[in-house]
Amino acid sequence: MTHFSPLESLGFHCNLTFKAFTGALEKRLTGTGISRVQFMALAHLIALGAMPQKDLAELLSITSASTVRLVDRLARDGWAERISDPDDRRIKRIAPTPKAMGTWEEVSNHAREITRKAYIGLSPEEIDAVKTILHKIRGNLGGVQ
Image (spheres, rainbow, N blue to C red):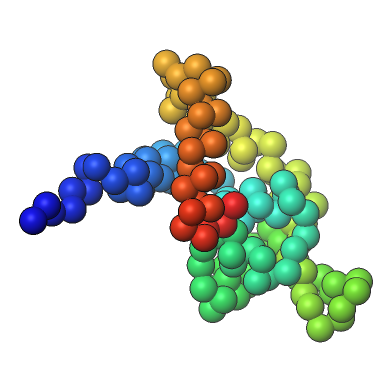
């Protein structure tokens, strides 16, 4: 019987790569007042705009309860706020604050520098090919696109 080898799994390699990226990001964010998870939430909120809490949870692949605690911390620290949805007042949308927008350029430089370092020796075509392949795999597994 052939045993599963994690070294043959793209999922295993993606996990190792994710840990390398997030570890580097945590080091770079030290002293900024923004945690890695807060950074990832703000990245989605700034790129995509205000969104319902459940959408943010899905993008971050965390539970509803974890998202509530995360948004509570973001609000407490002045990075995000809950606003009423204009179409459905029962829904609270999470939006980045002016403080977050003003700090974002400086903080996102850390992510750009990590990405630049990670991509050393890779062509734009190779990077695009990896993104395309991973997108297909997520689709095959029913994950976030």
